[in-house]
Length: 423
Image (cartoon, rainbow, N blue to C red; front, side, top):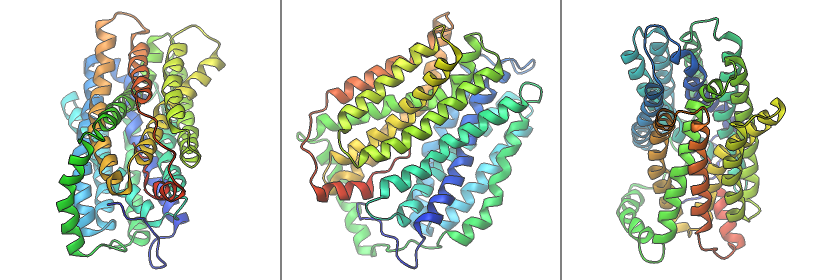
């Protein structure tokens, strides 16, 4: 689990692996953010009677499918290598998006969003593992971070397509573009190795499985319990922001008085900020000051959301939307890196795995939480302030962390090779 990923000569090379991972996650980002792009059109659908609560439920159903996809992909990746599960997941995602495009009623559409979430959940760990296998030691954070910006770039594409086609076109037309991943299946079979390079021996696998329970006991023991629970909580709040915004940002801007085209421009700015923020987080991972940077990033998300719900010049609102994107995806990257920096090598992988696993509950809760806020509080600003709460809470949680000693050069090198950035 904690072995340093090294690309052997017979394994994937860093450049092509990062490029393929970026393209796959770009398509995945399109599928993830498309619900937010079509949200205003769904709410205005004359036959489906979609409410704000329904839109939140659709977002939560997407997130609910993700852990199931991640678990299945993790098992399949160990059993069959990266290639076959990645190709199957791409095909699954394409079929799910096609079903969304032809869905004749809201119930079927909701089911397809759950299936789409499973495909999204499967591809994130598979792509991250593939890029990790190829990453150059010492530049692992940058390589994985660059690949994971595909999620935000996909969000940008979603905004551009929605800005061009909506509301003149039927919103389901946008889901037809989700069939494109099928074209990548032969590319995956050409570029991704069939097996896993440097696979540990079976005995090592058995020993590691036996040690897993012991690692969890260490995480929850007296020495680590405080930091473990704080990291789990901070990851939860971070993913509430990420997945709540991916579902709700365009609809909230429409509620605030902007037309659909303008609201999608804010979504594009949000994802541009997320790209810059994620790469910036990878650079920060190599320079220290993680506690202060993570607190500031959470704080920027809160400030940006407050600015977005107040009358401001259009340019300032676009900047605020970009800062919100940095405060969402960029912050989550920083939290992941902070977890890695705060644990010794023998606990680092387990700490990251459980932190992201518990945090997925925030991804599930985020869209419905924002929906509840907009329903309970009859104000166009309620949804924006709903994001402020987890952002401030996240900053407080990180502030409660005890400042650990600066990692040694060896520890920093290990962290660079093991800290995943994908949310």
